[in-house]
Image (cartoon, rainbow, N blue to C red; front, side):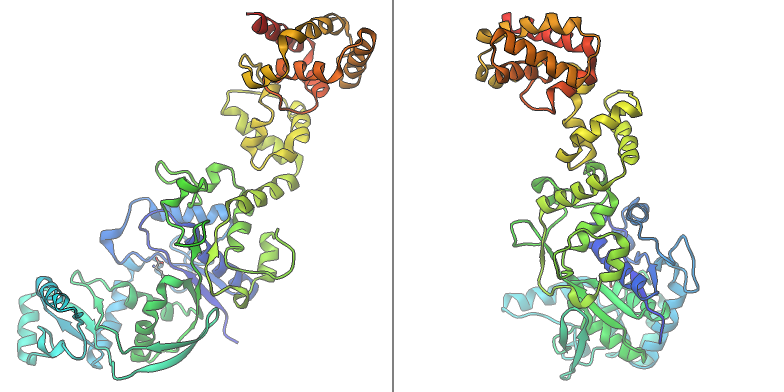
Length: 500
Ligand code: GLU
């Protein structure tokens, strides 16, 4: 059996969108599952649309996700170059072949003329199509003598090369691995441009030639390319090549359900639609998603593993993935589920890794701490966090004392009436030699019993004093961690705040 070879073929026209990364992932999973090759090909024939920095972005995003290509512009195999702009001589051979066999022709029409024709037809409520019916009235090698053609070429007149589409009811059936039976109809096809006036092939031609030359067995790509399929099939036929298997992946919809998730949606829905930051737009990596969680999230956008399991490692995905379980209809993006998945990975991470990630997070706040201190804090708050940054949100009070208090909560606990509670505890606290959670708990309990105080009110006051809000972990644990001096300092500061 032929070795499976798949490719991810992005154009370097900006940052990768979630959907493109999902295409890369599904290609990768399928290749690995079948011991095949995963190839990265940069489709940069449209030089005007190239955005500097995009190729580096693509490479970095794949690396971050752990989707290492077997062959790429940086890792040559036997089928390079892997950037289309470097493959021009290879295309020239097949362009010649298409022309010689009558499948393609030179067209000299000025763009303005075509635009005028389109305009005129539009005004009549019709559509102009450069095709079998109109091509002989146009300025091309089919409507002129061979002498004129040679003359024009010698003069260096600008031209494009068009595909001579045979539209006489060409209709055939094709199997798509996701969509099943597809009826391909070429009746409405135009004579598409295969080579532009700058001599570069268009996407369609380069894509088909490369897939053939790179021995691609399965073309897995987004649904937006489905409309190009008839032309691609005709090109395979014209070149006499075997047609690879196709799979067109469903769109990813906005969380509301309708409409494609676009690059602009990220900010609105509060979830980055890019894997990594791009200019001033945040990426999932910077937002705190772990690469393995990110992979898990995008894997489930359109692929239904069946069963209850929702958390899959990359190797489990490789094992379980199949195109047959990719849905035909679009996948709805669910931000809450994405966060939940990240949380599951955070919970499973070894404590040593969390400590090291949390050190990095603390650097942003100019805080240096010890592994031991962080270990205890992480253990105490990690269940509440979806991201490492949220560990900070739930534990900042272990590192810095607050001088801002949640006014609403203060009103709730009637501080002026209860301020004496705080005063009463300062003395026994300052006398303690062992400032650990259980000694502290006992000290509070004894005092409360002796003076007939209200335990819960006392606790709320202490919480406001130490944290600034009514949030936070076990109050005795907080005291133990920050120590006697800091505890008393915060209590006095709070009392001072209240009487002001
Ligand atoms: N260059 C196309 C893109 O940017 C690739 C389409 C395909 O995979 O055939 O998505």
